[in-house]
Length: 406
Image (cartoon, rainbow, N blue to C red; front, side):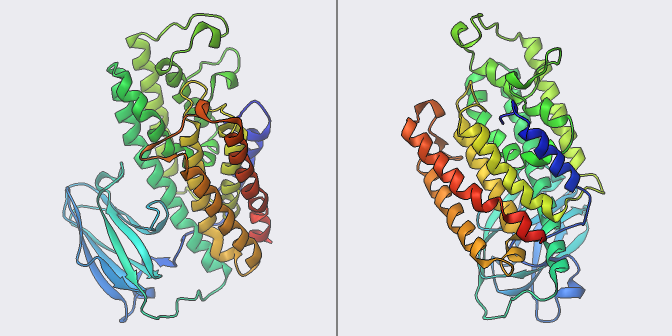
């Protein structure tokens, strides 16, 4: 993030001001956890066995329309169940806090398409038993009924669930990364660094809304005020990709000792756990404009830091961050898309097109799974092409909140 300007402060202020207004819920389907209210006799009924080692559904296909999942926790930890969209990020429906021996239900109005299901024993990490789930076209009319209030409530519970899901995964993957770093296995730690940060980059405006957590976790060296200790990801990044004296203000870099490594690792682990606690507070919520402003803010992150190579100045893994920011922006946009479309279908068409175009362009440089081109290996022309793609999406995206709340 380019924090040398006033922009990040404004972003934090806007997002923080948006927190705690109306509660919200769904990204691509109307969701309810009360089957009596929306399931009905015509609902397709499926069972889910969430054990300590797997997540098994009674069927992996259902017709479009009302689908009811009855999730039984046969394990020994509190668990969660998710129905994910085809990008494996957007949450179509989820149930939390299913205690051992307890059965809870999830009902969704499922549109035709490809999905994934996954369970999360212990409610941390990436979950287990992820499997493809298909919704075939039954011909049922799934046009939204009800007013904007219902759609707004449907756009946020799932966005909040998405935030929790990302942070829960971040907790465990950060520990894996830090264990390698503490042990002095720098090769493994360098390999884990950028992929692990992706979960944080997808929801960065959320982290920024919690005051001093983002500075502790994600400030670059140039952003730290004199007299303030520099901690977090980028402090460790510099130690893993140790600069020459020429790139370190003319001074030889002094590697951290084993004790110093352990201390900075412990601080990052503690601050990540604090972020996880914050998004799991019982009263945590976001407002509808916070979702759309989060999408806008994430594209601003790309424009101000990733496309300039300023975020990852030691590792040069800026395109990994770029991809994660873009994914987070897409999830936030998709969360409010069905509300915006009737108000401004031309804007939605333009955003659909520009998202797809930028995603395709960035895919030409790699993926989070296989790795990306390092920023220092990009030509000036390639950087300009990526910047032009970001600008082409940022312009219509900047209009999203005004249309949404207008």
